[in-house]
Length: 246
Image (cartoon, rainbow, N blue to C red; front, side, top):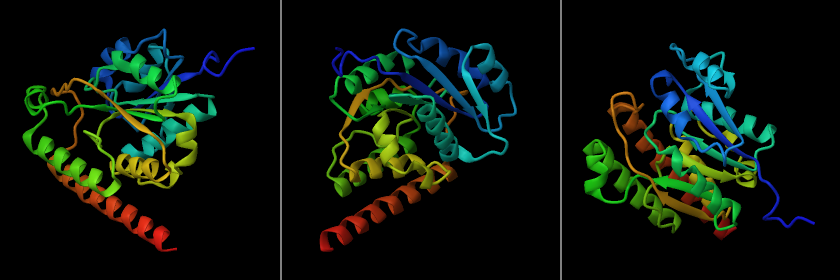
């Protein structure tokens, strides 16, 4: 009889894509095929050849009829992965900013029962992060928000804002992700809910790669995201206070 650890867990990588034609093949080539069972790409109404390329590469492809935004894209990604029986789901931006070769380590830490969620942290040292091309204002905002979020939650994560995350299936089933924002603040809402539900979060350092084709939100959208994250943190605190006084 097989033990829990011997059972083959289905590993799916989900790619929330928007105009990712220029970087998709590089991202795809780095995904370790001996570890990953399925690659799912959800296209959010790209106006380039992302969908055709994804089909050519043999991915499972789903296209939105309307642009739903980054959070809306992730909702579809996770719903499809869960429907198709994934046990471990890795969300990876298809913009080649994160090193997909590290996926095997993410999977191992979840498969072997160390963590429920693993984040890819781009923040190892200031020098390395800035040398990798992260704009200074983004680095400072990332640090300030992450410190604030750690204080609010009692966590000690080096980065709350990464686009490479791995989840155990039961985490996504528990956090009611379909109720979150369709915008970028989805990521913050997910992590606060994960903390609230008591799941264990681990981190793996990932090298930073910023370049022209790597999708990145502009200053205005970054500001909106930052404000949304602070509101999410305060909402989390409020719920915690209500529970403790109830």
